[in-house]
Amino acid sequence: MQAVLEAVVEPRRREILRLVRVREATAGAIAAHFPDVSRPTVSQHLRVLRDAGLLHERRDGTRRLYRVRTEGFTEARAFFDEFWDSRLRALKAEAEREQRRQDANREQRERNEHGHRD
Image (cartoon, rainbow, N blue to C red; front, side, top):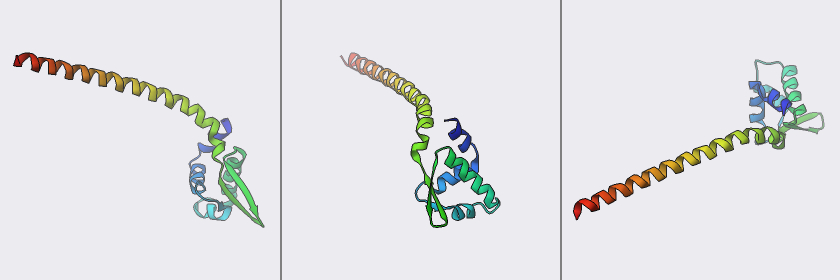
């Protein structure tokens, strides 16, 4: 998981992942999205992402094509889901408490209204 977190901390690497999330792209096409960065630097970013298990590299002749390996995020996602799940449980419990409070208030108002009519 450490390699994944270190890989995605860099903004350009996150952008590379977004570029190849839906379909694969060549190293040249990826580099074209970063005109302010040298091709060797883009290649280094690709290598870091690949070594972290986040990119699949496929050779087609002399070209290298890259696409996201979603399974590379599994361990990191499970880690973050632990926090998200606990927050969702807490939110659900709070929403249920609020609903019970509103229901009790509505019942009290209805009792008061019926009591005044008699």
